Image (cartoon, rainbow, N blue to C red; front, side, top):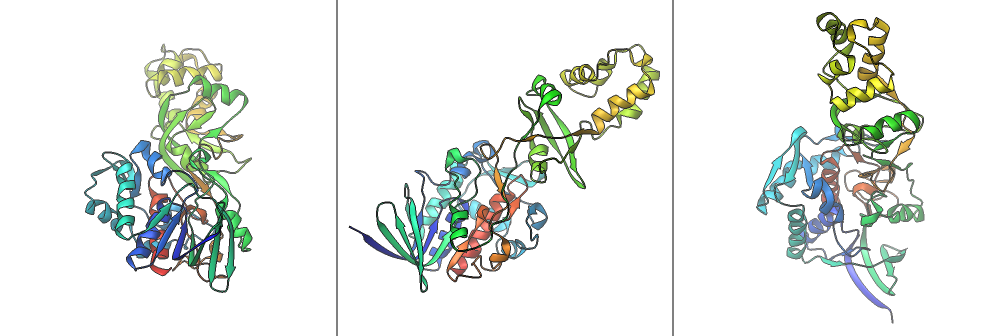
Length: 396
């Protein structure tokens, strides 16, 4: 037996963007339903920030985002800022703190943010159903008809796709949003895993493996894009904030330049030490500036084992270039299983930036990560979810 249920708004996806949209629509006395295919809501919020949720960034603006249209996100950010979300967090008496670079984290747990959103949904009488797969979506006149695998039909005048990207499939990521875009003949840009560790092969991989767990503050560069943050060596390559950031700009066959000591010109330093401490072994000299394990690995890889006083200019240049201008070619990334976000998505030309409504189909909205708007590391992607969700909620 088929059961038909009518709503003003149906939101597919109970993540950050979907919950925010539903709350705002509920405030406008809309009858709202959220449908989530997995057994839990807001799993990405739960695992983010080491379990403390980096829920926004006090410096978040359009400069922190990648998109084929870098201006697209400006409208949403002008309507709902990080300060607006911070006010909501304060209203619920959630304690938080700032880490470096404007990143805000819960003092206690990411669950505080999830409970806040659930409470707001309850206040606005938003219905949420879990473990529900949408098998078909049909548009008839100005209505959208959704049928589940249980033969239940939901009918709405506004349909919001908030299904996120392909990142971290173990918590329920899927390509559902892109399939809907294809169904409605909407362009989807190329998709890539982003904010993801980079991987290597051969000598560089062995070098990284030998240093797995060693971390330093580094500068990482592709063309004119530079990030100065932590870098950590892994059994598969390199990770850490600077690498996650630059990964959003990396494409296959493109090398990256790594400066392992961005605040020190090693060419000048090594030549000074050759005069001051000529009897000191080069690896020991490097240990004054780098973790000793890294210093030893560098001299081993370069096959240099001598006192600095005996080293030629070309030897010192070789070392300084490795430390300050290491040019490496990643063979790939760790992929969507560890990527924090998906780069690319629904082409912004298909969406009205002031409302999040699809230009070709009235009543169809896309919000959050499923759109071609990808933030830097540090709470920016959550802010895009809050802002885009808010804007759609005001217009559904």
